[in-house]
Length: 167
Image (cartoon, rainbow, N blue to C red; front, side, top):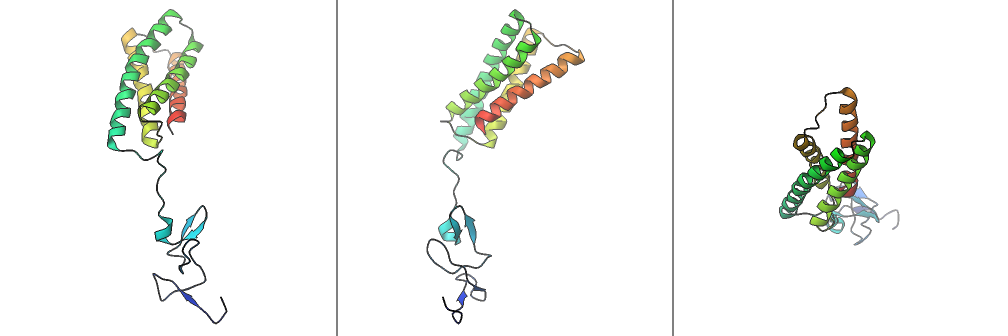
């Protein structure tokens, strides 16, 4: 391109530009430019889509919610049984991590290993439901501050594990 030759944006003809689309070569201005991992593109060539891993229909969300709810109830009961048989405070932290991992894995497999923020939220809610099933089924509600803080830390660990599997 010589200095006497000026390019005009294909979409905005009143704007001078020295920028071209990296794919089709069409002149584009900074307003029209879409920055992609491989350089500047026009809007037609950029067409960024979500990865298939993150694209989900409402059917997938329903399937994930159902799997999360069933897992939360089953794991909550198992969590309570193990906690009653082996009543160690620190075992509760390991169980919470296992609960989070198991719920995250089952939800992930139920939607063909898809990922997303809403799946992570679903898994987090399932961890809380599993804990509630545990304490209300087996009556292990304790009002001591140490136990409450310990249980909240356990729930946090379980949520972290579920979110890590689904995010």
